[in-house]
Image (cartoon, rainbow, N blue to C red):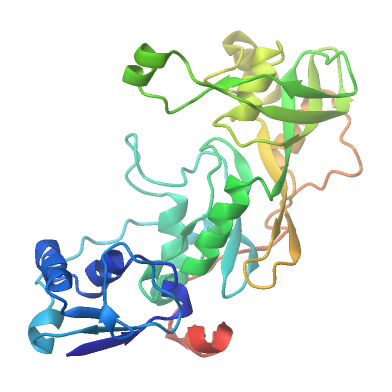
Length: 352
């Protein structure tokens, strides 16, 4: 017989998912059969596949322990090669890792991207500590590939659950620095323009039309010329490409935007000012910490190459905007976290 006590990191998992993760060599169909014939119990009572486990629950499984624990022979693929010099850490504790993501780096693989992602860098940096009680450190939210700036990585499952709620219910405050085409008519304002659901399927559109979602972006002009405006933005909703689509909708597209921008203006900005990326930077993120629930503020300075673009464009950089030097804020990761770090982090029972 096998017995497991549920840790704080596993709290909230469904029983069937816990069994699949704990006994990877056992076919899923057999796991469900064991539940059905009452060989799986939770706190002495018959387990149900869909029930959610709580911390300190005791799961017992009747059967041959050796057979249940035997792993199938498998050779994991080698991890992708990464350059840890690209990883700048702004904040780290046992619950989370906050990064200053460079422009051009995807958060996840997909759409032709097979490696060199934030996920790859984080897991190379954390090394053996990337996985904790079956949960592997993962980004808690997304920012566009072309956008730079603050990105949170959850290092524990409870942190991921916490941040999922935080971002779903808009309890995080996000601030961006943006350069847009043209002179904005007002020093500040609210763009309240519904946006089409980005992931709506063609079948859904054909059946019920385009699904429009509310979207609100507040902005304040920090400096401007007759050609461009340097703007600080906060978003009250989190729609895909929200800032980029909103400014394009009001006739002031983000400079350097390859999808929603003014392509001729972008070519001119590259030739005259040396801008070869999207001018959009996530500069500040405020959120409740997953353990203490205290408000936590993390800031990433404006990348030096964007500050140079402003200078060439004749835009006066406000004194309130910090500019990054070579790793001026945070630090560049030098190597993976190894077993030597383990003694510095308490076990889940002690940390809870």
